[in-house]
Image 1: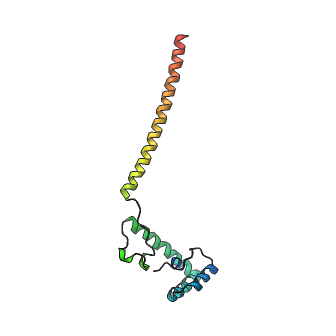
Image 2: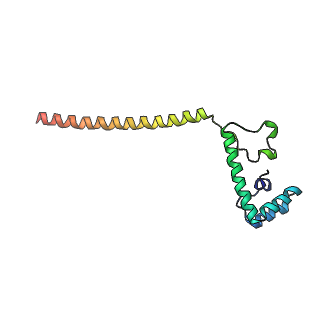
Image 3: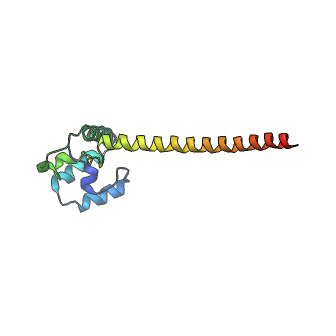
Length: 133
Protein backbone atom coordinates (compact mmCIF):
# COMPACT_ATOMS: atom_id res chain seq x y z
CA UNK A 1 0.00 0.00 0.00
CA UNK A 2 1.33 3.40 -0.91
CA UNK A 3 1.46 6.35 1.44
CA UNK A 4 -0.69 8.67 -0.65
CA UNK A 5 0.08 11.71 1.46
CA UNK A 6 3.80 11.23 1.10
CA UNK A 7 3.56 10.48 -2.61
CA UNK A 8 1.50 13.66 -3.21
CA UNK A 9 3.75 15.74 -0.95
CA UNK A 10 0.95 16.99 1.31
CA UNK A 11 0.41 16.77 5.08
CA UNK A 12 -2.06 14.27 6.50
CA UNK A 13 -4.39 17.04 7.64
CA UNK A 14 -4.42 18.79 4.26
CA UNK A 15 -7.62 20.65 3.38
CA UNK A 16 -9.59 19.65 0.26
CA UNK A 17 -8.25 22.59 -1.83
CA UNK A 18 -4.67 21.53 -1.03
CA UNK A 19 -5.51 17.97 -2.02
CA UNK A 20 -7.05 19.15 -5.31
CA UNK A 21 -3.95 21.23 -6.11
CA UNK A 22 -1.69 18.27 -5.38
CA UNK A 23 -3.81 16.03 -7.61
CA UNK A 24 -3.66 18.57 -10.43
CA UNK A 25 0.16 18.75 -10.19
CA UNK A 26 0.59 14.97 -10.02
CA UNK A 27 2.03 13.45 -13.21
CA UNK A 28 1.56 9.82 -12.20
CA UNK A 29 -1.84 8.80 -13.56
CA UNK A 30 -2.54 5.74 -11.38
CA UNK A 31 -1.47 7.63 -8.25
CA UNK A 32 -3.79 10.46 -9.19
CA UNK A 33 -6.74 8.07 -9.67
CA UNK A 34 -6.05 6.21 -6.41
CA UNK A 35 -5.65 9.40 -4.39
CA UNK A 36 -8.80 10.96 -5.83
CA UNK A 37 -10.83 7.81 -5.10
CA UNK A 38 -9.52 7.38 -1.54
CA UNK A 39 -8.73 10.87 -0.25
CA UNK A 40 -11.47 12.65 -2.18
CA UNK A 41 -14.29 10.92 -0.24
CA UNK A 42 -14.49 11.80 3.46
CA UNK A 43 -15.54 8.34 4.69
CA UNK A 44 -12.83 6.58 2.65
CA UNK A 45 -10.24 9.10 3.78
CA UNK A 46 -11.12 8.40 7.43
CA UNK A 47 -10.73 4.65 6.84
CA UNK A 48 -7.46 5.22 4.98
CA UNK A 49 -6.15 7.40 7.84
CA UNK A 50 -6.97 4.66 10.36
CA UNK A 51 -5.20 2.06 8.23
CA UNK A 52 -2.33 4.47 7.65
CA UNK A 53 -1.88 4.92 11.42
CA UNK A 54 -1.92 1.15 11.93
CA UNK A 55 0.72 0.62 9.24
CA UNK A 56 2.91 3.34 10.78
CA UNK A 57 2.65 1.60 14.15
CA UNK A 58 3.61 -1.71 12.54
CA UNK A 59 6.57 -0.02 10.85
CA UNK A 60 7.73 1.33 14.21
CA UNK A 61 7.36 -2.11 15.75
CA UNK A 62 9.38 -3.71 12.94
CA UNK A 63 12.20 -1.21 13.44
CA UNK A 64 12.15 -1.83 17.19
CA UNK A 65 12.61 -5.51 16.49
CA UNK A 66 15.38 -4.83 13.97
CA UNK A 67 13.29 -5.92 10.99
CA UNK A 68 13.96 -3.41 8.24
CA UNK A 69 13.73 -3.81 4.50
CA UNK A 70 16.69 -5.14 2.55
CA UNK A 71 18.71 -2.51 0.65
CA UNK A 72 17.03 -3.35 -2.67
CA UNK A 73 13.65 -2.29 -1.21
CA UNK A 74 14.82 1.08 0.04
CA UNK A 75 13.05 4.02 -1.63
CA UNK A 76 10.39 1.74 -3.11
CA UNK A 77 6.67 1.55 -2.40
CA UNK A 78 7.26 -1.15 0.21
CA UNK A 79 9.23 1.20 2.44
CA UNK A 80 6.57 3.92 2.67
CA UNK A 81 5.73 2.84 6.22
CA UNK A 82 9.19 1.81 7.34
CA UNK A 83 10.71 4.04 9.98
CA UNK A 84 14.43 4.81 9.91
CA UNK A 85 16.48 2.46 12.10
CA UNK A 86 17.29 3.76 15.57
CA UNK A 87 20.63 5.48 15.96
CA UNK A 88 21.32 3.67 19.24
CA UNK A 89 21.10 0.00 20.00
CA UNK A 90 18.79 -1.05 22.80
CA UNK A 91 21.81 -1.73 24.99
CA UNK A 92 23.24 1.74 24.36
CA UNK A 93 19.87 3.35 25.10
CA UNK A 94 19.60 1.38 28.36
CA UNK A 95 23.15 2.38 29.35
CA UNK A 96 22.33 6.04 28.73
CA UNK A 97 19.19 5.80 30.86
CA UNK A 98 21.08 4.08 33.68
CA UNK A 99 23.86 6.67 33.56
CA UNK A 100 21.29 9.47 33.79
CA UNK A 101 19.65 7.84 36.83
CA UNK A 102 23.04 7.22 38.46
CA UNK A 103 24.09 10.83 37.90
CA UNK A 104 20.84 12.04 39.42
CA UNK A 105 21.27 9.75 42.44
CA UNK A 106 24.87 10.89 42.93
CA UNK A 107 23.79 14.51 42.78
CA UNK A 108 21.12 13.87 45.43
CA UNK A 109 23.67 12.01 47.57
CA UNK A 110 26.12 14.94 47.37
CA UNK A 111 23.36 17.38 48.28
CA UNK A 112 22.40 15.16 51.20
CA UNK A 113 26.01 14.97 52.38
CA UNK A 114 26.39 18.73 52.04
CA UNK A 115 23.25 19.31 54.08
CA UNK A 116 24.43 16.80 56.69
CA UNK A 117 27.86 18.49 56.89
CA UNK A 118 26.30 21.92 57.40
CA UNK A 119 23.96 20.53 60.03
CA UNK A 120 26.92 18.88 61.79
CA UNK A 121 28.86 22.17 61.79
CA UNK A 122 25.88 24.05 63.23
CA UNK A 123 25.42 21.48 65.98
CA UNK A 124 29.17 21.48 66.71
CA UNK A 125 29.21 25.29 66.90
CA UNK A 126 26.19 25.22 69.21
CA UNK A 127 27.78 22.61 71.48
CA UNK A 128 31.12 24.44 71.53
CA UNK A 129 29.32 27.70 72.28
CA UNK A 130 27.56 26.05 75.22
CA UNK A 131 30.81 24.58 76.54
CA UNK A 132 32.71 27.85 76.45
CA UNK A 133 29.92 29.89 77.98
